[in-house]
Image (cartoon, rainbow, N blue to C red; front, side, top):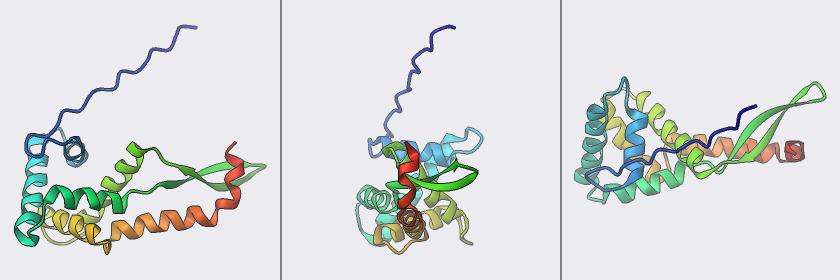
Length: 155
């Protein structure tokens, strides 16, 4: 057998406006068919919408929004003795960030108006704690809490 190579994790460059990696990461999540300029335009216009309408620092709003929507625990299905159990597992920070961003993006796509405006509204509502993304996180945590008795099946 040959040796497994170590996977080189590419370093994500920072975005040019806020100089933060998290903004660049969510642009990659929004991007479709390799159109990064369009995704960046969506991000920056929605963040400027937050700055103009609510008169707050958009990066701080975004940071608190991610903190409010990021799940800490998730559910994993495992078969034990012919029966499937939902087992709660702790998430890594990167996976929690990914789930939070995906929840925000999918919930903003459900709304009727333009994606830029709905994305900005979803970020601000998540900042306030009244968004659908926050309720998604709460539902994940509730199911993990109810299945806490099966946590010993993980090992």
